[in-house]
Amino acid sequence: MKLGLYLHFPFCLSKCPYCDFNSYQLKEDNQITSYISALYQEISAYSQKLKKNNITTIYLGGGTPTILSGIQIYSILKFCRDKFNIDKNAEITIEANPGTLDSEKLKLIIESGIDRLSLGAQSFNNVFLKILGRIHNTKSIIDSYFLAREIGFSNINIDIMFALPGQTSEDLQATLKKAISLKPDHLSLYNLTVKPGTEYYKKYKKGKLKLPNEDEEFEMYNWAMHFLKENNFEHYEIANFARPNKKSMHNLLYWQNKPYLGIGAGAFSFIRGYRYMNYENPVSYIKEIMKGKLPIDNGEKISLRKRMIETIILGLRTKDGVGYKQFKTRFGVSLSDIFSETIDKLVNLGLLQKGNYRIKLTKKGIFLANTVFREFVD
Image 1 (cartoon, rainbow, N blue to C red):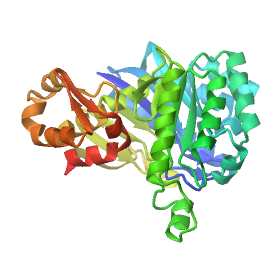
Image 2 (tube, helix red, strand yellow; image 1 turned 90 degrees about the vertical axis):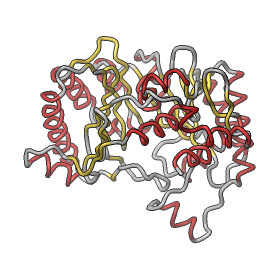
Image 3 (cartoon, rainbow, N blue to C red; image 1 turned 180 degrees about the vertical axis):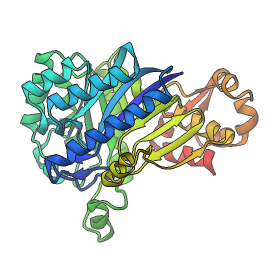
Image 4 (cartoon, rainbow, N blue to C red; image 1 turned 135 degrees about the horizontal axis):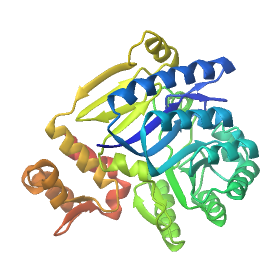
């Protein structure tokens, strides 16, 4: 079996007001030391269970993985190589905050075998960076980007957010033009969604968060799609755009509903039809590890129907959509036989297009993707 490996690092220098990821503000340096020890133990435990499996991609996410020192990142990757069968050409990505990078750290990151850098820029406008609670400014994004290029990174993603409080279409256009001028290999474009439990949610409920309306948000996204296409980026997934041969191989595993192993606090795994999740809180995660247990908080065997639905939803996120032949090969039944009513309804609404070989989202469907997905779940 081929697997993707995800390593979660939940610590940040500060918690952004919009963030609902499993992340925590770092209080003391020894939190990182204890956490890395627990990671090593979890990696060791899985290396025994999965020693015959090949790791094809590795992704270090967070939180802020680059809050760690270069030596710590290097050592973790070396430990993974010692314990797992990792493909020689495995894509290895690290998420990085521009405010946490320097020359020495980047050199050790690249020496560790990491070949893809995902830079969490979010905006190239200092006003919006402050609104988002980011610890960096526009200059530090640009400096970090060129430093990474100088040290040898040939595959860099830039993360951008849109539909920000008070943002106009012109604001987003300026940010994207600046991002593209740097010549990144990949660009991820996420609309801000206000999630319960965040500072933004509290403000939103009190009427203190002025967000673009749906029409304004559509105008931003529509402009971005055209602009990025004109600049030789393939729109291969709802929020992701890549130069030729620069798609994120790790994220494609998720969208193709393939197996992956998650290590760390709150990490998800999907192996042999089971999905399970580790304890979210780093303290609880470390406690379970220290008891000599796998830190699994909950899990479930995914039913055949649920696997079908998830395969459709994840596949529709991509440019290729869901192929009839691939679906039948995987599940032994026809996509049209099981979901014909839902598909026809969505085609009539102009949200899905149905061809001879596959179904995929229309342009309107891309923007209203969550509406499409709900139809398959309900």
